Image 1 (cartoon, rainbow, N blue to C red):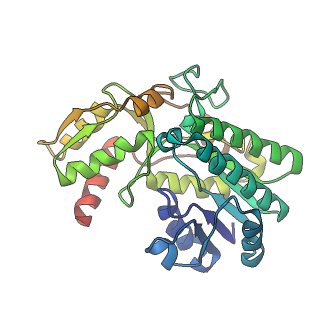
Image 2 (cartoon, rainbow, N blue to C red):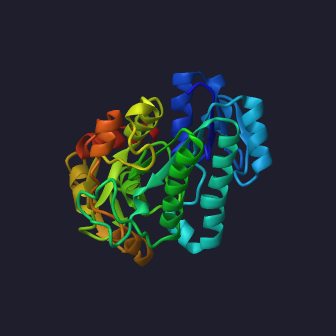
Length: 314
């Protein structure tokens, strides 16, 4: 990667991946785009432009003018939010992604697509979910992710395009609150622990989901995109995860540092239903063997860092 365009740069991943890539590749070589300007490092720390990913001409013009060799396509509507407006979610998550993919292909750019654990469904093996397995998701978000996984594979096989992607688990970050995902509770719990000393979880006790601390996710994107293509058997939709836990376990981790922390439950049927359709834990063997995926943070190390950084922000 030398000249990079990021879509959805104002989202949960983008607000951290943008400065991370600018630090590695030079601020002038990373163009952040979003549908609206958000004050802060994304729009002020390097090149920035407004972009609706469904506008193919605008996308192509940006690729030409910036001379990009890589598109990191992060624009999308998250799982729970998408269930409230499935057609709009499809329009952005599939139609917009197809527009981005085709624009990148026409200009010979590499393309990164972020898939998700949402690409799996209730009939998927829940424990040690294989890299290649039955998927059949039951949310519009998951259906869109599977669609784009397959389309990225198709573009690679049909056109020889350099497409790569990761199935992200729930991502936990101290920089920004997420915007309508099912794993959001694992971020909110830290914010409320610091501000209130307590948390009410919308995910039920005993519900396991894969998670990862954002620094490991950012490193994984770069490591995959810089990996030797001859070693990539799968290329797209690699399972990645750093840990799998349920609400009581993250609460117990917080109590090691904040013994007075308390947690109650007020389960949201929509997000609980989505969570129950996803795997408990992923098998990440393919990512480890094909490009050296190696997360550094476990639950307790992540908790220690999250609480420290959130206290510093307050």
